[in-house]
Amino acid sequence: MTRVLLATRNAKKLVELRRIVAAAGLNGIEILGLADVDEFPEAPETGATFAENALAKARDAAFATGLPAIADDSGITVDALNGMPGIFSARWAGKHGDDGANLRLLLAQTEDVPDERRGAAFVCAAALVTPAGAGAAALAPGDGVPGRIVVHGTWRGTLLRAPRGENGFGYDPIFAPEGGRRSSAELSAQEKDAASHRGLALRALVPHLRAAT
Image (cartoon, rainbow, N blue to C red; front, side):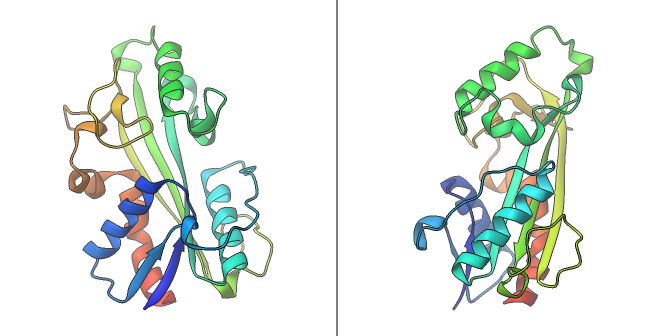
C-alpha cells in the first residue's frame, strides 16, 4: 500500500480527495491527512498566487515526511471586487478558517452590487510533490524541478445574496454554479466533485499521482 499525504487539516478536503481517488480506481493508495503523521513546522502562506501557496505546502510536507504530498490552495474570486478575496479567502474577515465571518463580510461588501455584476469563480491550484522534488526550495510553479506538478481548476458562477444549503464548506452556500439554480452547498457530494474547482484540479493530478506511486 502506497501512502500519499494530503497536506491539510481540513477534514472535508480529505474526504473529498479520498472520494476522487476511489472514483478514479487508484488501487493500493492510502490517503493520509496531517493528523496521521508526526507534526512538522508549517510555513505561513506567503505566496502571491494559489499555485505558489499550494506548491510550498506540498513541498514542505514531502520534505518533512518523505511521502508524496498533495496540497491545494483555493478560494473565491468576485468580479466586482477585482478578483478578491482570492488567496485571502480563508482569512477574509481576519481569522483564518472562520467560514461564517468570511461569508458575512463578503455578502456585506457586495450588498449593493446588482445581479448582472455578481459574477464569481472558485479557483483551485493543486500541487503534487514527491520526495525527489522536495529537496530544492519551493520556487515558483514551473521551476523545472523533477517531482513537482501544479494543476488548476476553475468553477464559474454567481454570488448569491443569502446563504442556501447545508453541504460543503467555506463560501459554498453563497455560490451558484453556472447553468444551475442551486448553490454549491445544495449539491450532493458526487455532483460537486464532478464540477467543482477542486474536483477538476484533483482529477487532473490523478495521472501524475499514478505515475508517482
